[in-house]
Length: 133
Image (tube, rainbow, N blue to C red):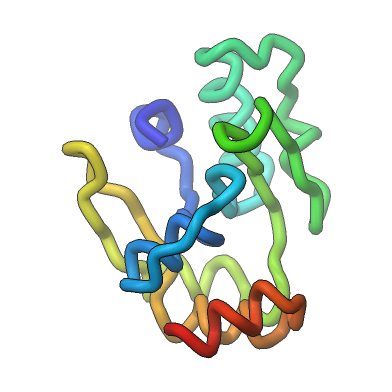
């Protein structure tokens, strides 16, 4: 996240880490990040991930709607997503919350948007998260 932030990437922390930040502490298999997939932001994302070792990263990888780029293995896997269910990035980015994690100000999906996403995704773990949030 530090690399994304320092490269000016528009992103939101989502998934299990966001769920934990909103008070329902559960295990998670990795870090889920949702990005704006416009060409300028995608180029920034590619530069950021190349900076921490993903040498083959290209802007094109981060432009397709619904793409998921995975790096590492659980429990330290990072998943960068260009789309998630039930919500639109630009609107969610406007409503984002900023939370401090290890001294870094991190943009986090708003609780109501997280709930909309969990409801729309509809998987068992998402519905369990929704019940606890």
